[in-house]
Image (cartoon, rainbow, N blue to C red; front, side, top):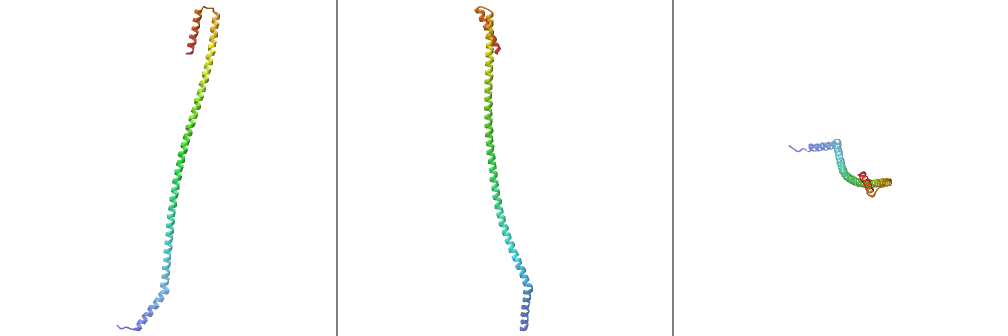
Length: 162
């Protein structure tokens, strides 16, 4: 094997020529496609990071909204409890007032009925007194008979009331 300079030069020229042709027609489009692919991967990574950041923000917003909803629900429950307590107190107060009013009405009605009964009794007693006086006047009787007559009428009054 001998070293032939012509073969060596032709090989170098062929290699350089092949490299230039490959660079123009194969490596250029290949590198351009690879660069586009690299840019695409970079943009997808950026989109994923943005999406992740958006998801984290959305999650925090949801947590805040959930906390707000819990606080509002607690507030509503507390308001309902207070309203029910106030309503119960109002109902009790109203019932007490109504009971007092009914009691006062009953006392007034009892007093009125008592007064009517006293008036009726007085009227009856006066009627009996008139009858007794009439009978005494009609009969002139001795003091013993008069006492017996008064006692009889008093018994009538006592039996009439029972």
